Image: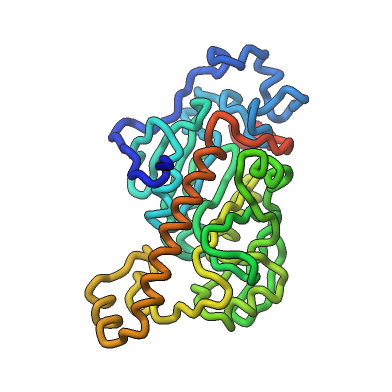
Length: 321
């Protein structure tokens, strides 16, 4: 059973990252000058994720908590999929968890709730991190993507309710497809559209697809914009939940618009007198289980000791110290 399919064990330990120098850890015997992202050489930055700054460059005298990566998830099950791939998980505060990547480095996980506004607030309040990442589900915008398929953004395109796209935001995906294939995963790389509203209907998805995106979510643009403002890299990882032709308007009657959780009383009131909706509800539940399982399995590799090296320049340490 994949680690992601189990509920992670969470402790109440302090989630402040270790402030001691990484020079004492295996593989970190280089001088401080060599580790500085602002003076990056071929051996600088993270040994396995070069786009992440070495957290030892941040001054421990400042008392600022720093993380190698901060991962933002809108929904509880999305957050649990991330935590299932981490070790030494602890609660940091409301909506925040800390854990360790496969090589022991620090990861912060933030459950944002649904939507750009909530994601923007969460990203603005996040502590210093070497990289921002969104992880969770999305709606397919092309007919050949199915529930459980994985998508990594090569750019993020916000669009308004009328289908007008805004300016694209950068996302790091170079080399990820080959890395994933070598480990038995198929990862689709392409544009990720970001909607201001929940995109449930085929007609709404068609409007989003008109800008050439593979999938659509609601939070990635806000987090990508925050990453750009900080001068750090952004990674957008999504798993398909609903497919292009599916019309899921009926779930808006009983799904909480902030958390995405079903309200039991409203669900019963909506579904009980409408038996023709039962098969669609069962199908959606199965698709969610598939999406959660496949996302968790990929994250276990992506956040493990054999993480991908995308070869990106690390941001200047001076802006973050």
